[in-house]
Amino acid sequence: MSIIPNAYRQIIDPLIDTARGFVEAGESLAAIAFVGNLSTRQTLAVPIDTATPETKDRAATLIRQVANEYAADFVFTVMEAWTLPPRLAPRFEEVIKRYGSIGASPHRVDSVAFTLETRHGLWIAQGPLKPKAHSKRRKTFDPPKFDHMPEVEGRFSHLLPNKDDAEPTHHALH
Image 1 (tube, rainbow, N blue to C red):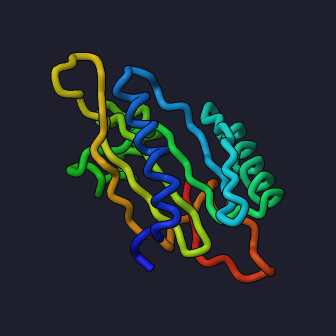
Image 2: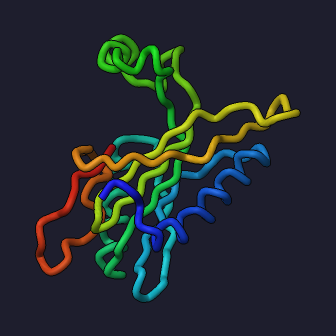
């Protein structure tokens, strides 16, 4: 399945619009995970501390605990991120080796990142923050284009509990 099911779009699209509103108002996006259950129609916000690898690990553990407690069907994350411009993306490993991280690179691009993990798979979208029309300080971002990414791995992977001890349907991300 390469397209996000509509039931999830109805939940995440307003969250994306809210994120855009914060960015356009000049605010920074707080990293946050929305953990939800479609049956109970309950969604809980879990803050993500991205300050250090240890706090990221603790945040991932907390998200898994909340997802398990509420029998979550999805986890949707929103955060600001750094990416590389398209011309440097193929040289990702070289940039990391030289600067230690994308964030430390002078080539970094301020971006917004979204992930949606469901039992149907994992979707990821990233887009650069760009100047808002008629504003020198405020920014915005284009509507995100989600890609189905079943092979992505990392710290924020397998956030959902296994349903009925079934094998996970995907891998996730950093």
